Structure formats: structure tokens, C-alpha cells
Length: 128
Image (tube, rainbow, N blue to C red):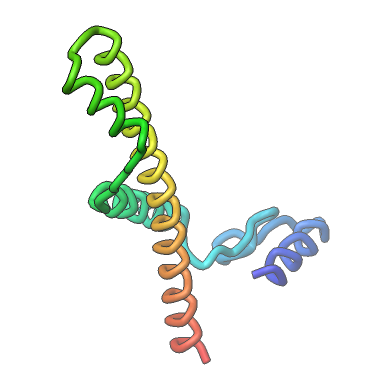
């Protein structure tokens, strides 16, 4: 891929201009193995799969402060205890979202790495 790019620059610098109709002979272009729409589709598919997988992972968040807030609220249901309980519930939801976002990023990277390696292996097998 790199050599073709260098050859294209040499060809463009020769004054003859790029050859029309010949694939890979354009000034400043890199001969990518897959066209851009296919790469965008791959990214969209892996992003959707990563979101679905990350959301489907059960998350268990345990904070001692939340337990204390629930205990105090069940024994004395006043506005102050309700406010503390609401704040702890918000912290728990935030922790879950952080975990799901991190898990989604990891799954996204793993899916794209796997897809890249499979395509690379297929190309290597088909072009000895």
C-alpha cells in the first residue's frame, strides 16, 4: 500500500498527470484495500453490536453508602433521607453508565480487531 502511494506521487510529479481509468493512479490517494462505504458500514455494525452487548451485560453496583441511605429512609421517611437516597441512586446509575460505556468501548475495539484480523487472514490465504 505504501509503495503504490509513493509511486503515485512520483508519477504525479513527472508532469504527465494521473492516468485516467487506471486504478490506483491518482495524485495523493492511498490504494485502500476496502472502499470507504464498506469501512463505514463495518464501523456502524460493530458500534451497534458493541452497544447491544454492553447494555446486555448485567451490572452489579454495591455501595455501602446506598445501603445506609436505604436503611435510614425505610426507618425514617423524611425529606432529608429521601434526598440522600435519591443522590445515592444517581451515583449508582452513573457508575452503571460508566461501566457500560467502558465495556462498549472494549467490545468495539475487540470486534474491529477481530474483523481486521479475519480480513487480513482471508487476503493472505487468497493471495499467496
